[in-house]
Length: 632
Image 1 (cartoon, rainbow, N blue to C red):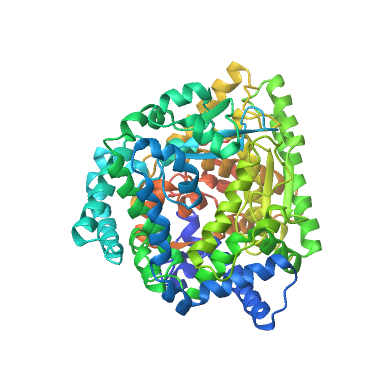
Image 2: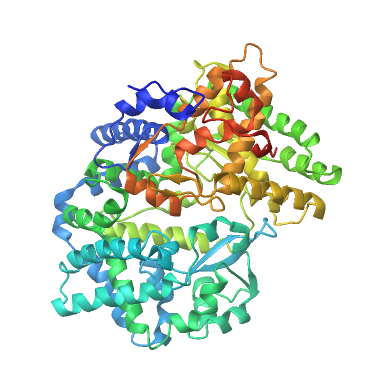
């Protein structure tokens, strides 16, 4: 094995041996890193589900229902007996759609049955007054992984991927009771309608600028944009009244809505909804159909075979009852000693951030005070929630129903619960992630960070690791999430999570110059599977930069600190082996940069990197001083 110098490639120097041994499972697009921890949690909880089910002994009613659903999903014979029939019964709703006018009357039914529609209506936090909710509307999903694939420069990839989708769609449509010529027409019409959508809906890069989603309008003005619908009637059906304000998240799409959804295109829409709806439903039908329906996504990610029925059953059931499952996992597998220690690290990082803000050269005194206020009021959610939310008491199903009907009934309950929140205050105590998820996040509209119990394990964090290793692992991730409060999106929200211009004009200009530098540091990097879009991943790269700057500051005050251990664990947590098809797709759909860049790019900006490993200008991990960026 070639000996890769740390000065040339930190990621490969630390991870080469592990990467050589890593084998990507046939049913996964990647292995190592986050996925390895997620697989470990999955195995633990699948064993728990099996034991509970075998003994018919459950810690509470929620886990009982989750295990009952798990057993139903695992019953291949039961699903085979239902076959494709449950999906065809659901899709028969489209037969009632004789005219465009019928759509407004049927919208709620279509939505509850998860039949794709050209408009999706939901309830979210008001981004300018985060104590209340507003109605939000957005457009549909497209067939390709992202709307950017519909651009002329992506024509070759677009045709290749649509060819794969077409083959899968035809294979699944052949299982229906439609005549062969109708099957062909439905698929062709679905592609035609998708082509209309592709040029209008937002790309992932556009969605990544989430403050731009906030376009509140008077309901009457929105109704004019949606002139082919009776928008007021739809809202009345959903909420019992017509809300005064609606947030239009995709102005380009809805500005062209009347040209998309009209009498001329009604048949195209119906056939698009039928085909894409059927493909979505395959997961809840027979194992044969689950296999067929999953072929498209497996081709996109390079995965050889579908997930085992046991894993699929666990993931679906635990996803539906995620909060109680996460509380069970956290309570049993996450110790109080660890929670105390990790909480101390969080507040040490927040305090260090405050000190760094005070000496920051971007911000003037007025803006510094507001930034420190934002840090002082930031909420911290570590491990798992104290109690299960009331919605889970409502998630009851009839075990005699088909799996698809069970799933749709539970989703309808969830949807009804979300819509009912419109005239209620927001709940800042709600957790964004369950305790058994290997992830972490910052919520800009609550101004809090969430660290589920499942991520609080080695190599990210362990009581058995040194403080230097923990700072390079979970410390960097905690700093990363806190930094999102001041990234290109979070900087536009105040301490209450409201979109609010709390910067002076000069301060924000200096900040935007730093944002542009960060874009340029990554933009256009050539990788074997594609080119990096610096603007798309800038907020995550800013957060990585902030996470490293604040933890290196703590390292300088930590007795016995080892920078070698710090940088090694920083690289170790990003260790991942992934299929090239998957890596290529992520460049278009994931706001996070490739793992090797997340390991290798941030250290180059900091003097500790050069001092620790005597990095010279002849080394590949060297960056000229004038190109180094430290934002926070």
